[in-house]
Length: 172
Image 1: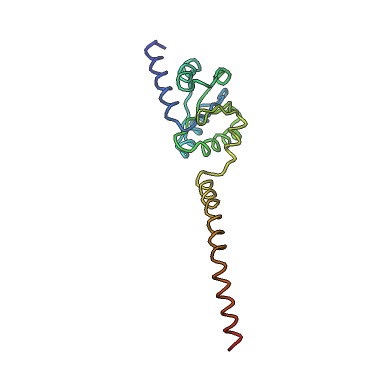
Image 2 (image 1 turned 90 degrees about the vertical axis):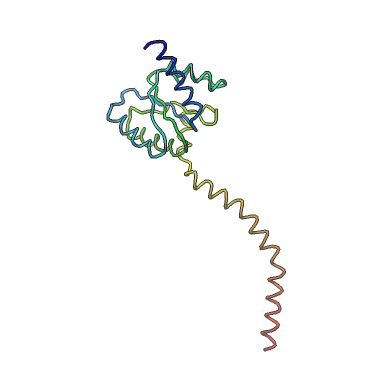
């Protein structure tokens, strides 16, 4: 690979690292071309894609983007990156399913919000509910105390209405 081409690849990887919502590093040794196509097709569902990289070029790009992270252990051996452009949780879920289906695909690590995740943490991400469900649960949790406060504040008025209604029923 010519020097100019390597510089362009490093620049391309740097941009990918900066713009992505999350990265999952995988070991793809033994992965067949057909399986790589299946992986790429499935990743499209979660606005993600697979990129096979050269470790040295990725290390140079990562050092500039992720200054505080040490990726020297991650970028050893055949490495590919699953780049998530939107929801890292659904991407992690798809990668986990694919790694169960294909023995050649193994999760090495991940990066989310400038934090290096172990393979185990990436798999825990995969077990989280989808983003919409998490946001709905959050809305319910925020709304619950307000509903309880309204019920407590309206209780005296409601009780007065019950008492007056009982008196009316007794007189009739």
